[in-house]
Figure: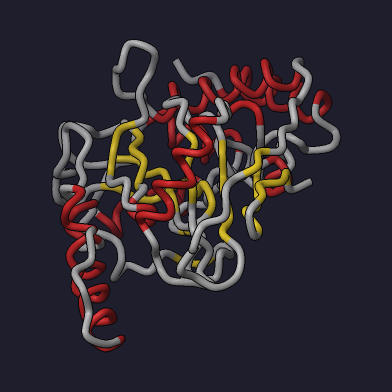
Length: 290
């Protein structure tokens, strides 16, 4: 059971244990909660959207704060998201699905890998048209009917809370920004995590991390033709799947084959997600971003 009093005490413990805010995302939320939402405002939001929010999430908003300390870069205030400018703003409801419609997934979903393989283009206009068509289909709001974004991982990767349908109360990762699809956050036995389970798992992981020394690594990569301008940002963190993820900054076009090669080099170097926080790939080296 999600216990807001116990959660508040554990977050205070983390705040004291990590004064430099070295735990991933802590430099955003600082282990602090925003002001709690008033129940009349929460009920008004539910009535306006014709949904009943899961009880553990309601408890967070009413008893801890309307956003703040939580997994990744923290929990969004109700009805807010990180947006295109990476700052909190009201959710663009054109990007959101129908909250009253059932969430359409029970298992992880993604396009087949071949769907992301671009054909040969005669010119830039053809390439732009192909990318536009792919994005329109891949980011169709109906794919996330019955869910709201509640947290972001950076680089347009987000966590959703399902509010309608068979998965109601569970949290799912929306990783379409790096072509990794939509998948449930899962526990050790692969069960789907509720908001409360997910939050407590984050707390336990952070408490372990705050008590352990941080390992820094520098990994040399061979030179690659990146096919993009500027810097490629990497975010490596243990998100209950033990995965290293690479996310390309908006300064260049997608290059899936390069991404796969770089990730392969990371795997060859036996780089573990827990070894690093944020990284930057610049030229032919990966260095820690302090």
